[in-house]
Image (cartoon, rainbow, N blue to C red):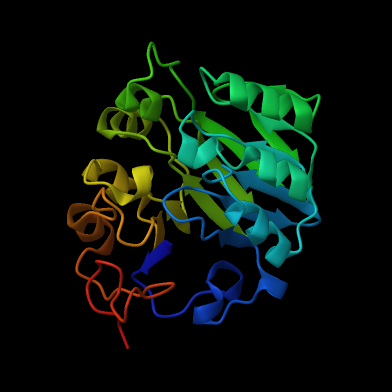
Amino acid sequence: MALAVTAIAFAPATWLPPGWGGAPRGWTVAACDVGQGDALVVRAAGAVLMVDAGPRGPAAAACLERLGVTRIDLLVLTHEHADHTGGLDEVADAAAIRAVWLPHAASAATTSGAARATADARLPVEGEAVTLGGIQITVMQTGPAPRSRDGTEVNESSTILHVEAAGVSLMLLGDLEVAGQQRLSRGPLPAGVDIVKIAHHGSAAQDAGLVSALAAPVAIATVGADNDYGHPAPEALDLYGEGEPWCCARTCAGTCCSAPPMAP
């Protein structure tokens, strides 16, 4: 379940969920409801970017169907964890994929799945910038490759993107831990970020300096309802909310999914 938090009262419908006045027909940025996992889709001027494919199962593919997406110009798999790469085969069945950016230390399943989907599958390069139709993508950080399957090391290998589409500026932080966030904050950061995809599903491991530097008015934490990880953590909500009213894209059993009460 995707949880979105905001410190502003009004925003363009193209980057709000349908419950806040956005509509699939007019979307630019969509955080798919894939449970405890990531799958985010961006569309502008006929081009489509997808970042992560969610966990194994039909959820990400169903999201693409709802959005009317039948072609993905670039699929970025930020890092090799099943909640980000597991839905690759189903996504490839749902949409024609033109190119894939692989995660560092990709598993055999991810590598073979990408090869079945497209002949253009490779690792991204830190600092590279590409334009797809109306979408500009910059690789802010990627790697280092994990030396093992240790969860923290794999999270720290996340590919971090700055994306601009239809006048919307996004920072997508993968599952970075604090050290990786601090490394990112030491480099130049884009100004005027509208949306940040919170690192690691809104875990407690957030760098306050990076949150402050990005100063995005809208933040998205993609979490599963009643997940065992405690995501989104109160510490993350406090950092991104800074005492402002909260809103939720959806509610869980009449409450705001572990966030403070929904604003009027």
